[in-house]
Image (cartoon, rainbow, N blue to C red; front, side, top):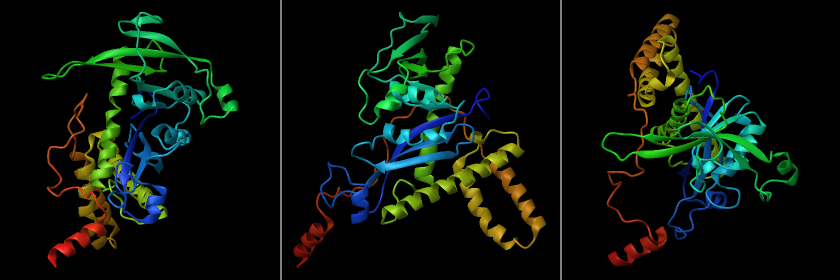
Length: 340
C-alpha cells in the first residue's frame, strides 16, 4: 500500500458551518459579506490523510477569518502528524519556501504544485530531461511575523528542489500544463512517477467529500464550540472506523483500500448492525456474519479514473427560496404585519 516503501500523506483544507448561536459566533464568526443575523458561523479546517488507507491522521480547526487562521497556519499545527521519511502532497496554496524548508528540517519530503506567483524557467538549473531540472530556492531576507528569530535562523538559506512540467491530455478537453515542485531529487525517480504521485492528491478532495456529504459534516448541529469539536472528532472517528473496516476487507481479498467504495461500505455496515444485534449471543454466527460482510464490502469497487479533474460547480440548485437578507425576527414581524 505504500508508495515506493514510503508513507505518502495528503493535505487539504475544507470549511463547515454550524448553528447561529452567540457562542459559535464568538469563536467562529460568520463572513463579513453577510449581514448580522443572516449568516452562519463558519470554521476552517485542514486535514492530513493517508494515501494508503484514506484514514484521517490529524485535523486542525480554527475560525474562517482573522490572523493566523489561514490554511498554512493550521498546517503548521499538524507537523507532528508528518514523520521523517513521509512524503507530504498538497496543492500550490501551501507551496512556499518556509513551508517546504520547515518540513525538510524534520525529514519530511514534499510534492506540490508550483505556486501561481512563481514562474518556472527550465533554461536554468541542472537539466535532468525535457521540462525536468534541479533548481535552488533562496530564503526570504525578512523573517515572517508568525516565526520567531531563533527559528528563522535554523531555516537553511537555500534548498535544492526538483521541478517538472507535464501535460494533462484528456479527450475532448484542452491540454493543460502542470508544473510540480518536489524535494525528491533522486534521479532514479522518473518524471512520470513524480507526475503520478502528485496526481494522487485528488484523492484528498474525494475523501473530504465523503466526510462532508456521506457523514454530513458540511453543517454541524451543536450549539457551542466545545460540542462542535466533539461532533467533529466523533465524525472523524466514525470515518476512520469505516475506512478501517474497508481496509480489513481489502486485506482478506487482496485488494487496495482505495479500490473499495466508502458509501457502499457505510450502507453495508448499517444494514448489518441489526442482524449483529440479534446474533450477538452466538459467536459462530457472528463470525460468519463478519466474513460475509467483508466479502460484500470487497465486491463494491469504485471505478479507476486517473487524472480526474472536476469543476467546483453544481448542476442541481438547492431550492427556489431567496437568500436571507435580513434577520429572521425582522422577517417574522414583516409577515405578521402583512397578515393582520
